[in-house]
Amino acid sequence: MVVALSGIHALPARQIRAMLLEQVNLPGRRLEPEGLNRPLDDYTTDAISDYLAYRHRRWPNSTNPHLLISRNTATTTTAVGTFWMDRLVKDLPVGVDRLRQDRILEEALANGADPLHLAHVFSLSAKASLRYTSAVTESEAEQAPITP
Image 1: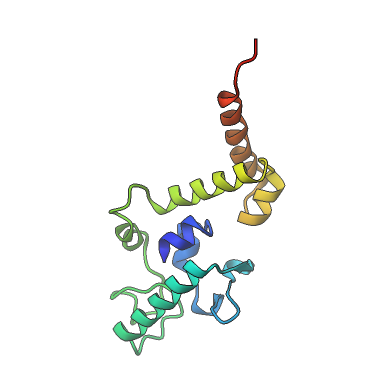
Image 2 (image 1 turned 90 degrees about the vertical axis):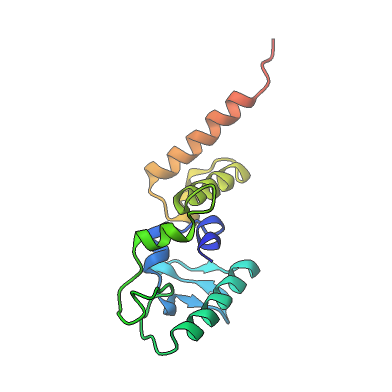
């Protein structure tokens, strides 16, 4: 599920850790972290549903409002920590932040390196969206055939 949230929806690790149960609308197939309103794809919907079933089996009486909980946070109201989340993806070739970066670059390539589009879709600052579009533009220029 963490991979889906970072690799598909490009949510930063801090946003995934802080996401509340009330920000996940499975019947409406929407994610609403920090005021965003994003549609949920089938893969992420299934991953969240499976995780919620696991969470309920493992900690049936937990009142922690966060989507992700651990044995240390199940009896509190705090979010999981960065160390816990890093351990989830330790066997992957890249971490959560790199998955997010790759997803943003993929979107930039697919949509003509439009900084306004990136800023809107991924809640990026102007500076960050320009950094991604510059990287895509430079990469495309390097790969362009040289004409005599």
